[in-house]
Amino acid sequence: MIFNKNNYQIFKQRRDYLLSLLRKEFPLLKKGIIFLFADFESERTVFRQDSSFYYLTGITEPGAVLLICLDGRQVLYLPNYGGIRQRWIKDCLIPDQPGISQILGVSQIKYLGDPCGRFSFSPIFSKDNYKNLLLDFSNFLNDNFVLQEEFEIFTLLDNMNSKYFMQINLYKIFLDIFPQIKEKTRDLGPLIHNLRRIKSEYEIDLIYKAVQITTFAHQAASKIIESERFEYEIQAIIESVFMQAGAKRPAFPSIVASGKNTTVLHYQNMDQKLKEKDLIVVDIGAEYDYYAADITRTYPIGGKFTERQRQIYDIVLQTQSYVESIAKPGIYLNNKNEPEKSLHHLAVKFLEKKDLEKYIVHGIGHFLGLDVHDVGDCNYPLVPGDVFTIEPGIYIPQENLGIRIEDDYLMTDQGVVCLSFQLPKTADEIEKMMQNSD
Ligand code: GLY
Ligand code: MN
Image (cartoon, rainbow, N blue to C red; front, side):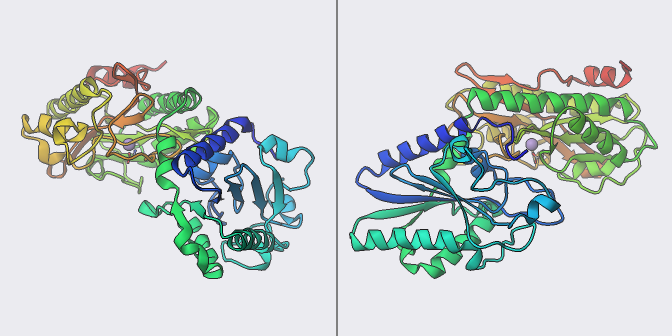
């Protein structure tokens, strides 16, 4: 099966919309190209497409390049495995598959270049493997220089958080080969990230599905949290529920942290034995059809919070309820330049009144979507269609006490709707869920 179940029209419409925005922004521009690069795979990890490439193409294969001309022509270039990949890994897109360009909504599909001789396409550049793309691109440049027309090249250059690392490396090779494009290249990141930030109904449905699967996994985990088990046993149940419920993978490495590990924010070892009366932070998210959930609950091992744990738990929960109540369009998720209108700064202020502000050591939340820490510029206030987490936490290492509560929210005209509302979260509800054996 070479097609996933995506409706490729959605992705084509996104590309058309992107083009219309570019035309609006550069009304005098007659010629231009958008260069979009897929990610590359590595042998040790299962491939997952770059989120922006996926957002605009729906194509889940590594190594591909999509070239979109401002006049609307769109050419997809695919690695040429010479038939080897199909024998080793899986069926893959090939240019001469009947009807395939129409299904994908592109004008033409070509191989990038000569057969690479392997089942996997190397990120190490070879001119032979990119022969066709290099020739087409060189023709495009020559035409434009001969005609002395204005043109621009748009691609993703934002390398914050190592995003687009592979793409930027490849583009740098293009810059070496075609130095004349250096001054003509613009970063498409801000535009694409703005588009990705506001979720359509279709995307919200997928996020909600990921949230539901993550809810099931929390419910299953809550039943088996008991002393003498290991953290990895809880992780195993969680990830098996994800896959049984139709999630392809966790949206990020699961965090199952007990005892002193509750104070380590992105704890990864998962090799500690659970101890009676300790807490365990379970911060997990399924990925469903490329969309992430991210939900955290903190459970008492043994099923009952101690008085101190409950005291801090209630404050974390109050902080979350407070942030929920003030989260309206126009407020920022986290903006240090306008602290009086920033959810993060207001949450810290709320904790100041309890003398606990020094124990919140991370941001109050982040956008959620194709990536768990999704793209989105925090300098723009929240608007309807934003999806984000609210996740206050208090971490007191000297008491081995870390508590985080995290839910996923959709911003609407009136304020936020909690997408993960079905998962219990008050201290009483958590204790009840742990006892309940249904
Ligand atoms: N759930 C992990 C994080 O938000 O960083
Ligand atoms: Mn989170």
